[in-house]
Length: 144
Image: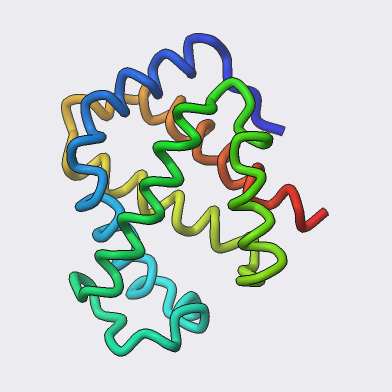
């Protein structure tokens, strides 16, 4: 299991403070990238009329994704308990393969690195990667 140190938590919170104003755009770009680069993920969104990057459904769901990330940041000391409802939703109702959480996390990292290159140094990269791994693990909790 990935353990976030106090330093990791501080770095993630500071980075989130800088990027949160662009969270909706980050989410839309990351989700659009995921659907393009990993087309197998489209199966979960087949009910959408348009799966192309920048489409209305992609933007709307990207916003939801990043509100989940914001929730995880606010619950960073106990992400698993903080994301319990989201874990249950994805496991029991949506039945999303947990491997997709890691894929989307990677896409979020790519987008943040592109939009905030000065803030995305190796140290913040490592801390954010650990945080997103913890978030993915928390969302996967109800699968076990």
